[in-house]
Length: 513
RNA sequence: GCGGAAGUAGCUCAUUUGGUAGAGCGACAGCCUUCCAAGCUGUAGGUAGCGGGUUCGAGACCCGUCUUCCGCUCCA
Image 1 (cartoon, rainbow, N blue to C red):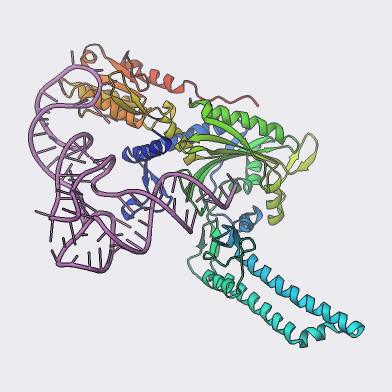
Image 2: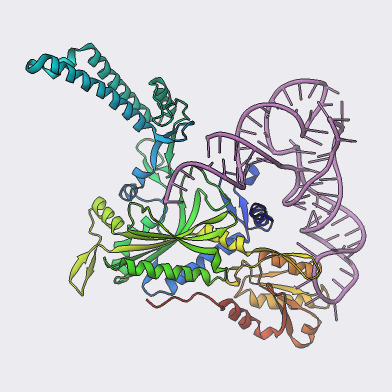
């Protein structure tokens, strides 16, 4: 089976067993938007909790917040998102090059301006010292005409861009006969507003309402709360602020199932450090995060670092943790040394002093930031796709099983009466009522026992507790392990403790800072 | 955005050149069953992705559109 087939199987398994459904499927779905089903929501929640514990609960100097998705519009000016992610773009179909439509028009204007300049220079030479450039420009018919052209183009361009009338922008480009500098052709696509950020209006009146963006990353919610948290928590550098939550990006091409979605969930931690210490912490978190991934038991060969050579405007070091998805190694998590870029920018735009006062040196300074940022949906896909297995058993039959790390499994225990008589269902219900207080449990009495085991395998339940005839005599049950299919006989009274102990096995423990 | 492939029941797929839409599995109800999906009986579930065209008649042919997957591109 090749990877493409495997990926298709994984996607249909996700749907068939209630992990992930296409959004609004009864209306044909919505491109690159997905809903988590009854089992998916549990797995996703467990991943989030596993991360949260590793970050917040296990580190005394890391706290969490939950910032709103809506933020003050100036946030995105300070962060650089407004400038970086909002342009009218047009592609040349022949050269496949993409241009900003306004830049193409400005270049065209510049060419006309060149013509005027040359005209003026020529005249200046001719008339010598008596030459009055201003008078010349106002009276020379060719210059006047070109100047009119420029004014016309510029005013129309500004009008169309303000109105976001991109059809008119394209028409203008075609009317002016602008060609692609690379291919020299006029074979243009439509002008499209490339705006990575989703926008909406705050205030129900259309007039006077402010444009509000849905956050394209959760990190800014942490930066704008830096002062609040520092002042209310008594934390000293180095310390971290963690957050999980939805972010939104209007990707041009959103693909590969839940790998690249327009609405997605991030798990981010911004670690504030003393300037100069950032590389030490960058390396600490690099090692720590890979350790976290490996604690989940997926083969280390599926992970690798990818150091950035070209750095973003805010970073002085950056690496990705890449995971081998069915469609190849792709970014799963980013670890970035963001310097003081964000706090300095917010300081400038807000006028607030976003600094830490170091009582050891009696100095105030803007902390540097080391960020770990992981896509929750991507982590879900990483876990789900590597857990999906079709095993060939000794008798040649095939078992479809999700080898999800037990700590992350949607259901921890299934309680199954061997047969639906002799009081076994009642006994099983009794056990279930106890266990469900601590673990997510499923009860199933329908069909043959073997089939019920396979049903649990398919959703990744690590333990099946079976009530049989012996149970009725001595209050013991069998507990079946999903991965080995082996069974142990244990006392009902010990079940809770045994399961709890097994779930804790190999769990992540942080390295001392 | 460009190119390729696909879309019939929850799933996998039939429906010979156009002639009133079917099976297996699954689900549900019941029977039978002492341990790894294969026993028996019954029930439910589809205006064939959607829209239009050709035709006496379209799941099938044509056009459009939507969605998904793959490659390129883009993004990070």
